[in-house]
Image 1 (tube, rainbow, N blue to C red):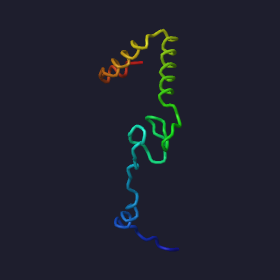
Image 2 (tube, rainbow, N blue to C red):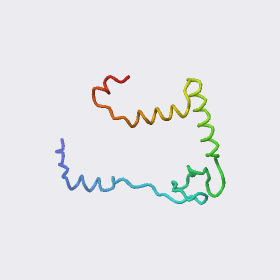
Image 3 (cartoon, one colour):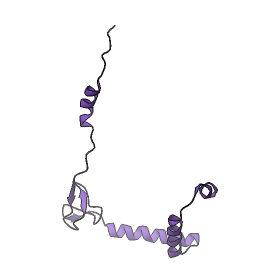
Image 4 (cartoon, rainbow, N blue to C red):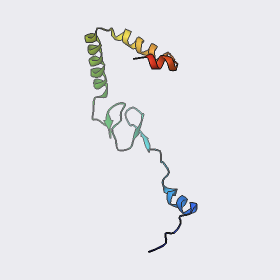
Length: 102
């Protein structure tokens, strides 16, 4: 039976020297000059390598339209619902209010 050798802090640190986090490499979009990940479509304008791949503005408009329709079916005005959400987000609640909120 072999005796297990101890691992010193120095040995552990040397092993972990390559575990550092690295920031993602960003480049500028040729169309809108927004920062984007390399070799990926721009999330702002939907272009990749100079050509339009996805209609981002159209998708945003569709999403907003569906959101408004959903609020109308629930019986709320879109502007009032937005104001209500902003008001709730700005209010600070203490522990008692949080426990009673449902």
